Image 1: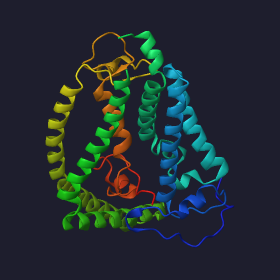
Image 2: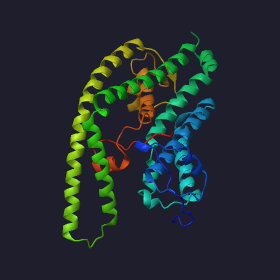
Image 3: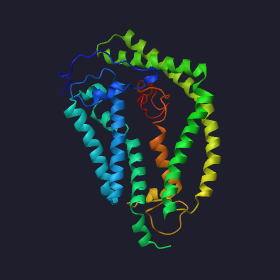
Image 4: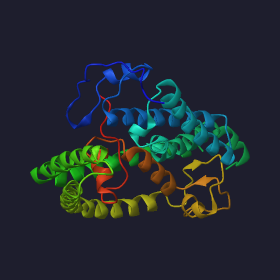
Length: 137
Length: 185
């Protein structure tokens, strides 16, 4: 589906070295926002993935969601939420960015590593009492 | 067990510090040099130009156009190679520093369970996640495993000094996986 609904917007000013300005966040939740700079959009996808990784990591560790079901659940939710965001909500043309696979793998491994760190930390923290009970020193 | 939580936080802190140290060393030896800045700007410009040209080229494009693109690709490959050579200096320095640091941290955290995993890692990863730990509980997490995970998640986010996606894509294997092009301000 092409981005025919996108309006023309004046080009967003950018700092040198590709750093994003605050105005990017105002575009993130607007389904009709125009994304002239591809790198900017890919950075949004990247950081969204990291946020999802932190949130899911903490929840999964606190619940806790054990086993590979938790990992598989994270992968599905991470990929699924972002896919729904860029495909259904923003309705961007994936081919402009190298296809759905390129958008799906953008920042995925980093977010997975971050998820693992958050899960380990929150599981260790949230279940100290249980671990103490099971492994008395 | 409360020391386990402290160890976890400490390892996250250590990985942030070592990532900053690595970037700092690279900045001192590489990023602030004129040669690197010039090469990086050249590579960025050429990559974007080449990407635009490749998008507009059609199947029926003349031989001259294709040869022009090949020449530009060759020029870009040479510049990328020069860029990699410039970064080689910092890689050696970082390698040397980190060998010493890792030896020190490994001896400090030797035999210590720094976190508990809510799952059992795959058998070929257990060699890393259960490294130097006593007992058979495979949900015990060793220092090195947690450190590697922290480094993987933190390292790519720091600063915005790496080449852009366009440059990395054109360079292929030279520069590794594309990092984010900048940071949010």
